[in-house]
Image (cartoon, rainbow, N blue to C red; front, side):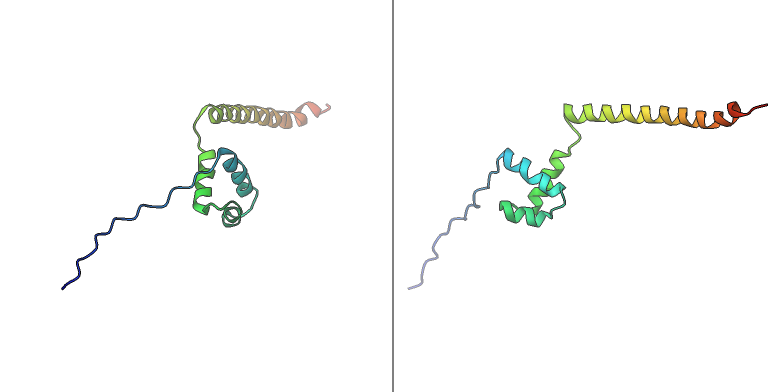
Length: 101
């Protein structure tokens, strides 16, 4: 008698790990402070690729906070350009007004 093959059911993938927002907020600054992704991942039992993804999500240039920061940076750059021009004009004017005839 031949053995009948036993039907197998496909294995379900293991459940995905869930990390709290607090854990993410703590892990990403460690990565930004110079720790390697592997060392941070070993401490928190997450993968380095996941840390890189969280880092990219925090730096995502969307949302009201990012746009307000972009506006502030743009204002500061404009102000810096204006002050630099004023300085250059004054630097050129010093020899002219400093002459005694």
